[in-house]
Length: 234
Image (cartoon, rainbow, N blue to C red; front, side):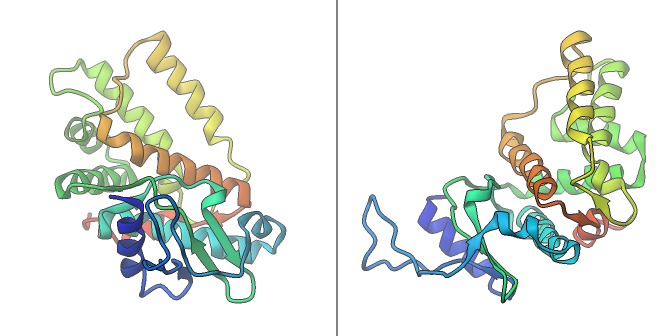
């Protein structure tokens, strides 16, 4: 999607979320090189990290809910969650969404596969995860059992926040270091991991970037409960 089209589309999709704000575009002032938007009085997102744990958790919950709605409900996702793409209004508690240049649309079957693998991961069903890594493309049907198990191990580790019951402390987690260590072992030393499918790359950027963003905010959030409402029943 083009940035202006993506902005208008996301503005419509999140209109029912009073804590999210997408500034309106002024077409009469917009050119091919400059996009004119509403002026929004707000603070840089970093200010949230200085606030109470309750406020940090509330903002983290906004990001989590938006992430899962983008993937499973809208199938339209802004895939670049860096701090510069957001502002925050401390008085209203609203999150301002700014940059939509990296917005991607996902096919229905792609989203369905991700819903199934997410359900299997949360349930801790290794056999189901093994089937779904093939559907998503992390492994091939004719891969060795060892290679498929490696893909399963990586998925289970990466999705630790989704498997955690209760609030996950993103700021205190050493998950990125553990993922790097396992990835080096499985992909470099043992050559068991396949490169991820091209269509997953932007989604991975969003997922990893969202984790790092919540860690930087020092948020604690129940990601498991946030995602379950979008997944098929066990």
